[in-house]
Amino acid sequence: MTSTLRYVSTRGKAPRLGFNDTLLAGLASDGGLYVPESWPSVRHAASELPFAERAAQIIAPFVGDEIAKSDLEAMCRAAYSTFRDPHVAPLRELGDNRWLLELFHGPTLAFKDIALQLVGRLFDHVLTARGERITVVGATSGDTGSAAIDGVKNCANVSMVILYPKGRISEVQRRQMTTVQSPNVHTVAIDGSFDDCQDLVKAMFNDRAFRDQHKLAAVNSINWARVLAQVVYYFTAIEQLGAADSAPVSFSVPTGNFGNVLSGWIARRIGANVGHLIVGSNANDILTRFFETQTMSATGVVPTLSPSMDIQVSSNFERLLFEMNDRDGDATAAQLTRFRESKRLSVDASTFGRWIRPVFRGQRCSDAETLAKIAAVHRDYGVLVDPHTAVGLVATEACAEPGEPVITLATAHPAKFADAVKKATGVVPELPAHLADLFERPERTELLPNDIAAVQRFVAGAVASR
Ligand SMILES: *Cc1c(COP(=O)(O)O)cnc(C)c1O
Image (tube, rainbow, N blue to C red; front, side, top):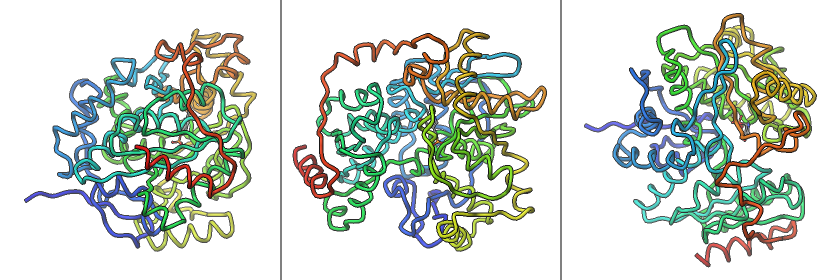
């Protein structure tokens, strides 16, 4: 008899799905997020394996029999052959008991490549088997758009339209999207803000006829497969250190939507030798305040030097909340409804003591501290780090106990945030060779007003033209 893991919604009202439907669904129909019905256990590898092979091993129990093992292995190999470093996610020592895990060696220089290179291939595989096509629409303020585009640029069954706010993303970020020449990929500069772009995407999804006609889909950070793919590097980092059987290794994670650090929590839950999870925040410090006060209270978003973490409410936190409620979907849904109304969510002392205190630490970091950290790391180790990584390093310093081994996740290449790095160190970080001619490549983009009818006309035309 074959068996396969099923997925349930954190709000308890959506149908249970297998892996492939969970992959394509993104958000559950009750507004919740999908999580596995039970947690499989995964052992550390006895010796270091190639990243792609290890990825397939760790991911397989979550896929069950829905994708053949050999297909999953082939997709992992293809996804991770796009990385410039043979380790895919190499460790770099940065002082006693401190390491950086470099997650930025993928095509678009941010850690999101690790998930999206695989997710694009998973989408195409499942859609080919079903003879279906989809249209992914999304809004980006920078990193997600380019990583998503690169992940699907060779997918036969996926069209993609990414909206970005005209003049409000960096030139590197824009060019990484607009110089991709694949006919299934389209970028649109909207005459408006990032919030306007998000509202346009929401309006397209809320237009049921339009959504069904074009089979709209999303690849935002709540997608289960993205969270799952990120679990892998927590295992491989510990295996690279040879620390599977020694003292637990803690991780410091520059955090926005809580996707990356949730993957660390899952790695710990299923058997990785993970100690503490240190959550680094910039001035948007809702999580740090939660760890201090047991209460989450939402405020406005402040722009910072680490823009990929400028987030008001971390959407993936809902998956942890579901666990904290002993997997009671009704209780989780009610708690989130109250949070939406009152902008406050409190956790009682015993729940906090059981789920949060033993695992999580949190620290906020100002822009001034971020710049000082970039300068200090350059001075002390000759290493350039991007502002997001610097937030993680500040949090490591504040939260690590004496002698505790800590790996800080380096989530972006310094050249992606060259202005901040130059301001801190006087050095302009160089783009890697594959992007050295980025500024000479022809751009292809569309400019549209902040108008839903115009955007829908464009999406319909883009889908028809493929
Ligand atoms: C997306 C992103 C983050 C935040 O990751 P989450 O999974 O949203 O917490 C941090 N750093 C960089 C460079 C990013 O692109």
